[in-house]
Image (cartoon, rainbow, N blue to C red; front, side, top):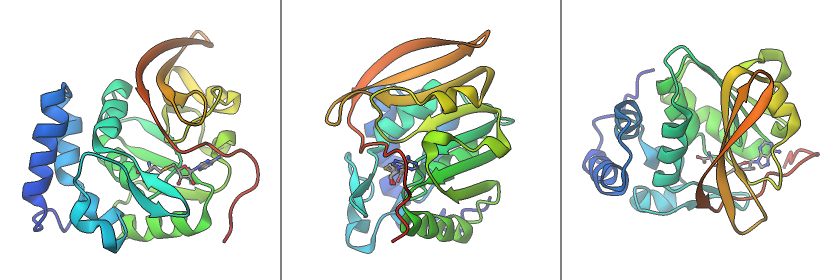
Length: 220
Ligand code: SAH
């Protein structure tokens, strides 16, 4: 993992984002803050939005999807309490921004995206940034990625009315999953632990994600 553009012209904006949007709002996991200081978020947003990449809000990334607001990404990562040795499944690669953060925070990242165009673009950005410990697949992430299961942690970046059971099956015992659960326009973040094979649900803050779409893949 190189992040060759680490000393880019956006570095000051990144520092400012970490300080005002994250640290001052209670994110205090140093590994998460450090990763967010390093990953060039502007590389993951389409050209017209680059100057706005470090703003306190989500941004469009094409195909009707969005890159999440920095704070909600940091909160999800902090609650997952990732270890450097973890193998993690991400559902909803989108721009690949969270994938890049995960690649710094853990050992192996497996990410599934249902929009082929987004998956291809994310893969090329991550390759350019030398994220080597990441595998991306085009598919329906509600089915997980059985070939590489079980996972130490699972991060779902899209909203679902109920936690997909296949994902829980692919979580190792003692593992944890972060998933936004609820109806289309307002969800709650749930941290779901697997304890002796049973879910232990902790309800965190409110959030608003694009929907997790089950079934067919968008190959356009
Ligand atoms: N973490 C991403 C957020 C992307 S938004 C980022 O930082 O950019 C959520 C993504 O989930 C969208 O790209 C959407 O296409 C994808 N998605 C929705 N349903 C999915 C499914 N069933 N399987 C895989 N990806 C899905």
